[in-house]
Length: 146
Image 1 (cartoon, rainbow, N blue to C red):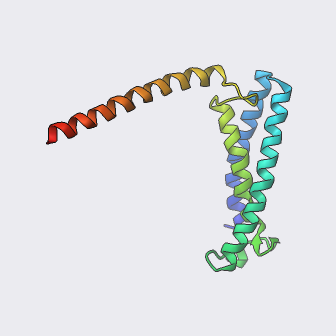
Image 2: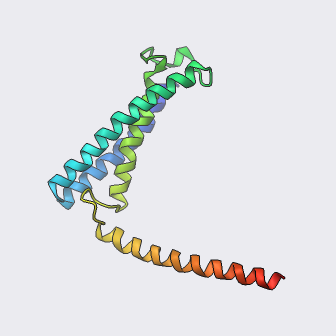
Image 3: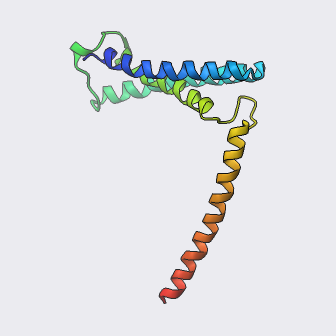
């Protein structure tokens, strides 16, 4: 199986998640300026991650840390890094914000969505109280061990 074939399988899954997130955003009919900010953030992140991928892939390949079977790559390169390597960076930049949208994270305006706000408040107060009881429990166990 070529690297492009492997990428196609992986990117197909990412595409399904991205489409679901876009549909979810359109259905919510949120603030258009918030959507523009999200798109700008994704675009800037994509550019930075692709540059970093190019730099670090070239270094890793150059020092012999990673190698590729020539018959399995397309022959298109950015420096000495095969073009196929960039698919994972693109997938990450698209997949993570899409999952954020689908799982009810903060929207582009910086305010928590109703489902995220109720989930965060419950989990935040629960973890704080269990953290304090955990520390008092450990001090009492230390005291009883002496």
